[in-house]
Length: 123
Figure 1 (cartoon, helix red, strand yellow):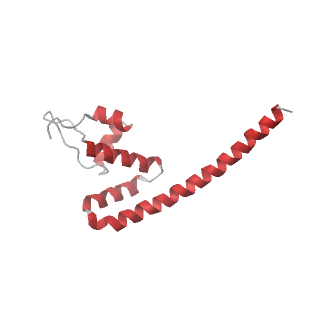
Figure 2 (cartoon, rainbow, N blue to C red):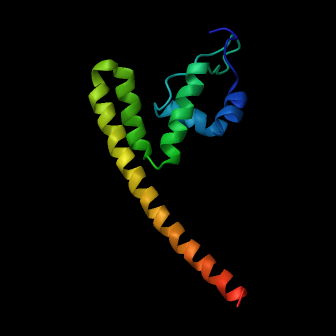
Figure 3 (spheres, one colour):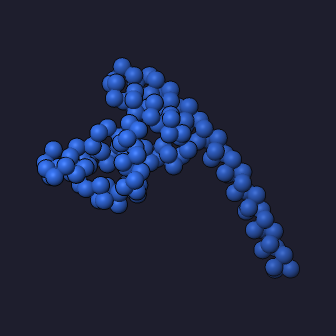
């Protein structure tokens, strides 16, 4: 690959994922095998970083690692898996929307409590 990429430390800083997590994601197949520089060190490309950013969003929104691995496997298989990938993302989107609705309900309770305390303070 040459020196066109960035080191694992730089990729860690950029992605917000630890170097350990980056190596783990590669080991379990979430990230395709990362290229190496002349010294044999991992060298992350812009495409690698974009994929890591997407994985981070999936993880942050609660997608299980197993589902992420399945999705990554389908991506590697190519465009003929588009329908299954879409189904995975749609199902995850529904779970995210349910979680948002739960959080909005929880937030409304907090807002009512805060308003109640404001009312008590001004009495």
